[in-house]
Amino acid sequence: MKILTGGITSPKGFQATGSYIGIKKRRKDLAILYSEVSAVAAAVFTTNVVKAAPVLWNTEIIDKKGTVRAIVTNSGNANACTGEIGIKHAEEMAATLADCLKIKKEEVFVCSTGVIGVPLPMDIITRGIEQTYTNLSDRGDAARNAAEAILTTDTFVKEIAVEIKIDGKPVRIAGMAKGSGMIHPNMATMLGFITTDINISRDLLEKALREDVDDTYNMISVDGDTSTNDSVLLLANGLAGNKLITQEDESYVLFSKALHYVNEYLAQQIIRDGEGATKFLEVKIKGALSKVDARKLGKSVITSNLVKTAFFGEDANWGRVLAAMGYSGANFDPSKVHIEFMSPAGSVVIMKDGRPVKFDEDQATSVLKEREIRILITLQEGQAEACAWGCDLSYEYVRINGEYRT
Image (cartoon, rainbow, N blue to C red; front, side):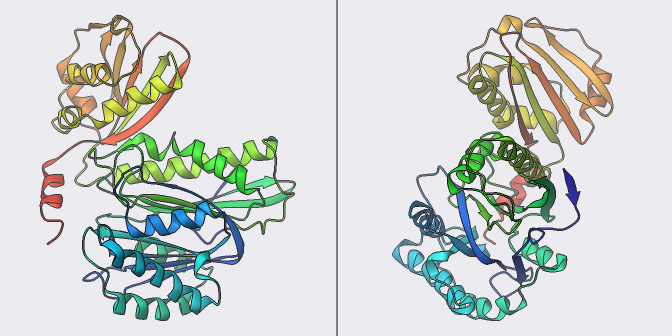
């Protein structure tokens, strides 16, 4: 697999653009992604019962198994909890872009992110779409503009592109994402867009995305809040020219591994940009009875506010880690647990065979002062393992979210 320098437009036949249209005060706030030919689509949406209007619109497209040609996204306003008018506004966004591109509105995904409960300024958005689509391009700067336009409280752009060979032909997969706060397993206030020129059946595209989300986006947490808008949208337009993949063969496995690389990278970038975060935490669970148990344990540790605050304070408080494991709902024997904290400054064993180990507090502090920290938990129960990613909880997180609407 080759890592490319481009963004979402790296696969053949995809164009993008992003611009400032006036929803937010200063930053770019409208992004458009376009496939020159029809693309099969797969998607995973928020598990929150309260779903934003764009999620409802997109779910209907997926349920009807239609092809997709474009995605239009606004930032600064979530179009969530806006009632019937919100549904009409989402459809109007799709229809406006469809008219511009001479396609059907049912071929347009719509995404929104930002403040909840405020109707969209449709005069601004309609005019913005009509002006912005004319700048669609497959250039790298156009991809970057789109990646910038979907951000809210994010502090940096999140994009990636890779290339693999299938049937001797180059196949590219690219992605861009936004997310910084309201991030929790089972998706988050995150939007993920993935493009690929692979030729693959809809069923296998859906399977690859659905299964990989469980090991990537569903294994991250910033603050324990699951959003109303989270969506991961994947478009495959087939322009790479490989033989159509209809079975879980070697080509499918190769594609799935590359897709996992893209998704894992974007998921981790979201955590690295967590609101107010000063620490990037990786929780590795090894030796669990089952994959389900491993995931539960990892999620529980990264979600615990007490664990998060301990790492913010650089306190090797292993009791909080063990307590979070205990209420995870996973099956494990506490008497077999090993816990070790690791970072570029070294490592310190905190617990062995379920008993606390006397450790050097100064060494532990040195380990926890680093920006990136790994928590290795070994259970000695089975062969299953999982990784989860999270961050600490700081004073700055409270400030950002205390002032979010203003």
